[in-house]
Image (cartoon, rainbow, N blue to C red; front, side, top):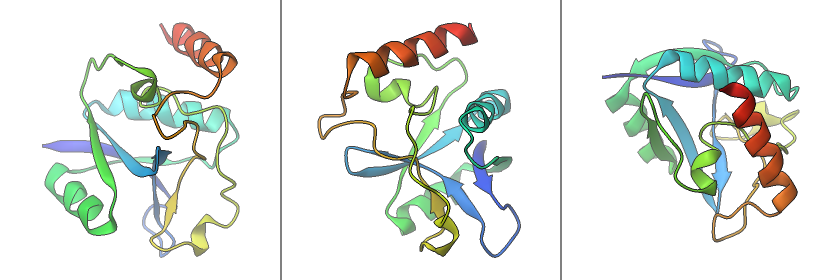
Length: 140
């Protein structure tokens, strides 16, 4: 099965994969639908995040990479509907992102948005949840 991931500097020595830091876990989103990956990439770009490239890869290869790197692979199936606050981050990136100006120097190379949730996985404030809800509604 092919999945689609977001890569930064694809095909270079400083290639990095987009991930989310959620409740102490590093989560890599694996989109089944390439249009969902493109939409997410566009939302990152709108937040002045470095523009990622959507790359189609074999699911087993990406899962192996994630296991080896200590990341959690999360498959976002076509038609995915979030069931909680944490899953809403799989549809739209958090409002605040980690400073990625030095991401190329990190090992393994990965660009990760800043944590936007506490240890229970809940969004920290109602205003952030409201802003996320408005952005999601704007997509419909």
